Image 1 (tube, rainbow, N blue to C red):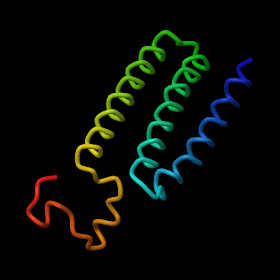
Image 2: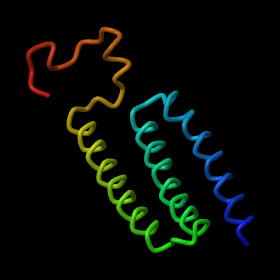
Image 3: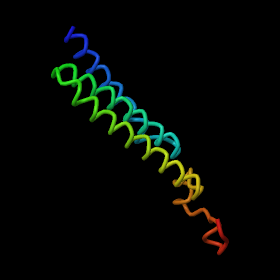
Image 4: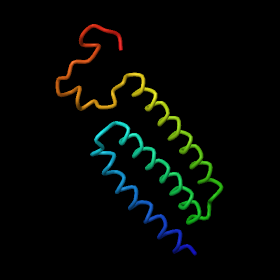
Length: 107
C-alpha cells in the first residue's frame, strides 16, 4: 500500500514539473496564475501523501490545509490585482505600447 502512495507522489511531482512549463512560458498572466494555482493544489495533495508515508497524517493534514488556504488567498489577491490594473498582457506594454497612464488618463 505504501508503494501506491509513493508512486502517486512521484506522479504528482512529474505533473507539477509539466505545469511549471506553463507557468514560465504562459502567454498571458492568467495562464501563469492558473499554473501557480494548480501547482499549489498538487502540493497540498502531496503533503497529505507525505503524511500517509510518514504515518503522521494528522500533522500533515493541518499543514496541507494551511497551505491550501494560503494558495487560495494568494490566487484571489493576484487575480484581483491584475483585474484592477488591467495588466493581463504585460509583455505588450513592455514593448512600448502606450497605456492610459502614459497619456495622463485614469485607468
